[in-house]
Image (cartoon, rainbow, N blue to C red):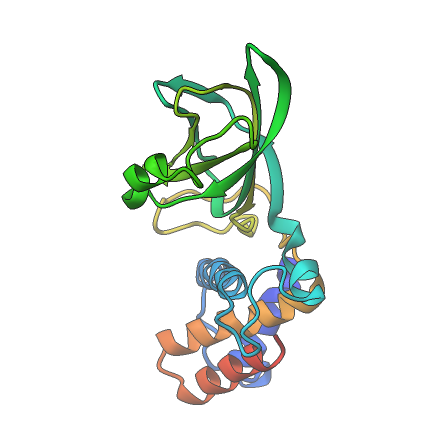
Length: 232
């Protein structure tokens, strides 16, 4: 869907286009509210805070709607005593899984099953025989801390390859010639929304709800918020 179409649809739902009411809504307000709505919609679908209470991959629709944001990237991991450390990408939104291949002098390279653990329970995880890193059983755990992934080996093996699968941030739309008052930068290119048109319609309702709340338009706020949820 073109950004010009998104803008028209948003103004239509704020108030009738024919009346020209609220026509002083600027392009940056449309862009800001739409980009904010994208993030809110995605986070709600991932967590399951929606009308059907479905989180990511809990139904065919969720798998289909969110697959655009699910990517797998190599993770450059550096050895740090009993764990390897890798930086989380800048567009990271939510964890999915990590795959690692471990090596040991006595054995061939093998793929490990990695569980996401809690940094607060690190000492218990390292002591627990059923949860601590184990090359023989091809199992270990990882934690998240300070925008890094810690892949624990307990000194039992080395990691030769690592891959992080995660949900990334949705791509922000940009309108050519539109100036962002927060940064003072004027967009020189047109960046369109990457989602399917049916999802964009939901995000438009979400964005209109944000704008309606900003201008204290209660009717539009209630109607568009309800519409966005009912269609999920």
